[in-house]
Image (cartoon, rainbow, N blue to C red; front, side):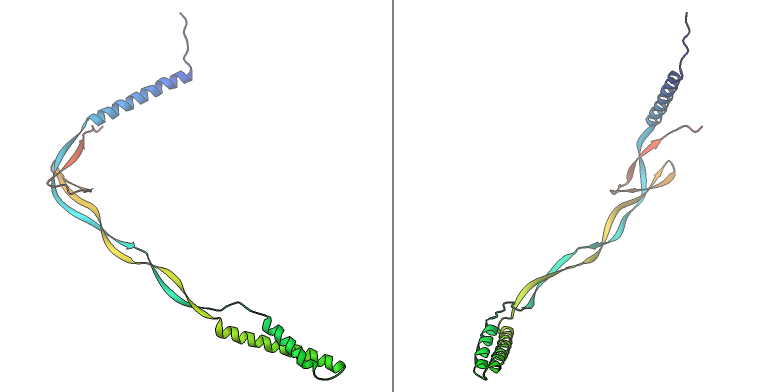
Length: 181
């Protein structure tokens, strides 16, 4: 007969299996020693919590906006330069005529430009309406139901618990019996 010496891995495996088996047995015993029964309700109070609720709303309105036209014509300035140059050309002689023509063209162009700007301001501006909106916070206070604080008696002792629903005259309780070592 040969003796096989167990290795450390086999020993750990056997010990671990024993521990798991023992824990499972204790759990089964603890679970099997609990029961559900009824306890007498001695009081119950509804519990509310005050909360603030934000309900954002959007307010919109039509706002008048002045719009200026960016249409600009160079025609009046060109026409003014031509007319001014022609008028200036009628005065003087020789080099003086050239200077008078150039001065007339510059002055006529400037007058034509100023007339265009004045006419543009008077006629092209208009009012349009644009929608503007903003978000407004509407904060209100509400009472939120949390449940019931219930006082109940079991085996001559008073206990407290919070429940979702009103328990009525009795409440179901789980009683566990475990040995004290």
